[in-house]
Every structure is written in structure tokens, then in C-alpha cells.
Image 1 (cartoon, rainbow over the protein chains, first blue to last red):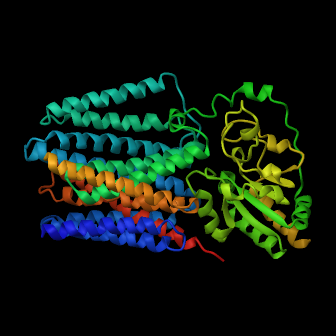
Image 2: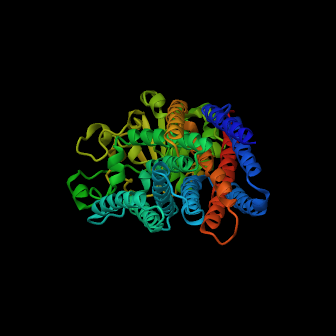
Image 3: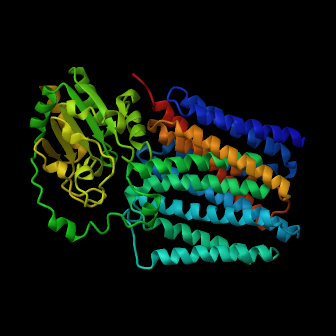
Length: 463
Length: 95
């Protein structure tokens, strides 16, 4: 019987790998997700068969409740809220791994009264530490994203020192626990420290750095599953955990590179706090912008032959993606070549803009990555920036004293004309002025993106 | 756990991580969000451990209650993760 279960786990692991491989291409991605879910189903089925019938009722009730909640969330969540959902699910994964490790530890030491060996003990401690950090860290990320706590970086003095002390304390407690497994107090204290650490580590990180944080927590949720795999001596947990861990780390690296910041710099937090103060605003030259009305903007749209739309998080906030699709279709009907330029960190998680525009029914071959489209701005008649700020700031290329200097940005200023749809002259996440807005070829279209673009579409139709 | 079985698990961990890096490096940015929610569902694999933990006999043990909590959370993760990924990928269309 055991060999059948082991083979089922092997099949599940292979299906996860094939599934992830298929997720790498747009054409096969949906099938890949299904392949991966079949793998999960096989792993679950094998495990349910393995356990004794006496517990089946409890297991089915828990699975039923979890499935209903999961399905409801998955169906109801808005595409703009996907980052929140992923953050929450990362947290659930972390807490689940922590609970499983603790449950097994308790069963062995307190109920069966057997001794735990060193390797298992270290694995339990790691599961609890990583799982705990993932859980509370993800909850804070979730609350920052949905606005129930301020999305700004929350900093206080001695913050990093406290984190360091807590981490050292966690290591010390683990060492104590290893010498005396019969006493569960150590492991419980370790759990409390892990929960506190997760909270304190994410609190100082600002909203626009969330793509990095979510990617990293995603990776942690995989690592926690991996550590639990070592606790239970279970291969499929280790394989899946390793795949997710690797995935999260790669996405974290991509996001950091796209912001030209080191992971350490993001994690230490506080970005945008210092420059948001009075100093930066006072010494820079005042930017004089040129405003444009909807009617005039419509005429510009009518006269061009190529258009690149640059969406940013502001588009998601204004829920303007559907109106933008309408605008792009209208322009295409007029024979204008329309494309979308996607900066890797636009939005609140990796690939966020692509999902929003896909939902709004924009064909995915129109969504072009930064590196591919950046040379094309120079031969483009019109660029329409919607709710993006720092990712189109030329200061990243020209001003060595700018906090975002060195960050790869979209070369929108090279186009003939740039129209920026923006709610107000408010600053972007980095808290700095955007020189683009004062450029000779740049026109500002102020107002709520959704309303202004709806009006714009109306005007263009009438021309 | 014996040193031998630990080494075998370590092999699995390192090879699977390497494979993960190779596979995910090739995923285009367009698919990063579904990739993340899909891998999120996979990290719900703790469900397997939760089912085993749930199997402890007797209700009034910490192990049992934690196992049931883990099972519910991991199920939300698995079911919700796969369902929302499918919902997203369904929308990726080329006209």
C-alpha cells in the first residue's frame, strides 16, 4: 500500500513540474494550471486513502469548508484585488505549514512521548519560524494593499535593532529547544517570535514595494512547506515547496532589478520617506506644466498614426482599464497602430497590468514589455500615460541625485507628443517631482482617469 | 530521521530548486501574476501534511485541532489558488 502512495506522490510531483512548464507559455498556460491541479488531486487522494477511515468525516468536513471558502474568494475577487488575494493566500499557506509542523511535533513529544531527533527538531523550528513570518507578514501586506492600514512605509527608530534582536532570540530559543524537546514552551515562544517578526519586517515597507514583498512571501510560503516536508519525511512537500520557493525568489529578483534596488534596500524599508520631506520639493526647479482639455486631446488622438498607452497603478485605482480598451479599439478603427507598454513593476504585483488589461479584453499580443518597446518611443506620434509616474520619470536616466536614478524607465519623453492622464499634480511613490510633466512635448489631462477617458472616447467618436 | 534519509531529502530539495529556477526563468512577464497565484496553489501542498495530522485519534488534542485548522487553510489555498488562476488565464486571449 505504501508503495502506491509513494508512487502517487511521484506522479503528483511530475505533474506539478509539467504544469509549471506549461504555465510559461500563454497558449498552454491554462492547460498547465489544470495539469498542476490534477497533480494536487492525486496527492490528496493518495493521502486520504492512506489515513484510517475513522477520521474521514472530519477530513471531509474541513476540506468542504475550505473548498467553499476558496471557490467563493476565487469567483468574487476583482482583478484589481488579485495582489490582496495572493498576499492572503500566501499567509494561509504559511500558517498551514506552521500548524502541521507544530501538530506533528506535539503528537510526538506530548502524546506519544517519544524523543525528536536533531534533524527533525531543526526542521520543526524552521517550519515554525518561516511559516510564522509568512503568516503575519502576509497579513500586513494584505492590509497595506487593501488600505485598512496606511500603505506608506511606517518607520520608527530602533526598528532594525528590534528585528535583529528578535532573530537572534529565535536562534537561541531553537538551540534551547534542541536540548529539551519534552518541554514545548521553547517551540511555542519561537512561534510567538516568528509572528512578531513577520509583522515588524513588513510594516516599514511602502505600498509600491509590494511587488517585491509579495514575491518574497510567496517564496517563503514554499520554503515553509519544504521545511514541513523535512518534518514529515515527505517528498512531495519538498518538491512542491522547492518549486514555489524558487519561483518566488526569481520574481523577487526581477522586481528588484526593475527598480534598480537591492533586496536589502527594499526590506530595510522607509523608501520615499526622506525625499517626501520639504527639502526635495524646495531645491528642485519649479515644474511648469501645460494642461490640455478633453476636446483638444481628442483632436490630437485623431491626428496621429501611432499610439503607445502606458498604464500604471493609477489605472487600476480608477478602474479605467475597460474605458482604455474602448479607447484603444476606437483608435485602431481609425487606423492608428495601438500598443501598450508594460513596465515590470507597474501595479502592485508582478504582471498585474497584464491581467487587468486581459480582463478588459485587450489582446495579449498588444502588451509589450519595456525592453522590447523602449526603442520604439522615438518613432511614435503619441504616448498616453495613465496613472503611471515614477516608471516614466526621465530623472532616472539623467539626474544622479534622484532617489530613482538608475532604475530602468520607459522612454516616453522621446515620442512626438505625450499626454498624461493624472488625478492631480501629486507625487508618485518615490515622492519626487517628475520632469516629464514639464517637458515641451508633454500635456497634462487632469481628472479621474475613468471619467476623463470616457469623455475622451465620446469626443473622438464625434470627430 | 536517519542521516541517510536526510541526505536523500536534501538531494530532492536541491534538484527540485534547481529545476524550479530553470523553469520559472523562462516564464514571460505577461504571465507573472497567474504564475504566482498558480504556484500559490501548489504551496498549499501542506494539505497532505494536514490530512496526516488530522488523522490523530481523539478530539481533545492540540495536534488534532491544529491539523484541522491547517487542513482548512491549505484547502482554501489550493482550491482558491487553482480556481482564480484558471479564471485569469481564461481571459488571456489573442484577437
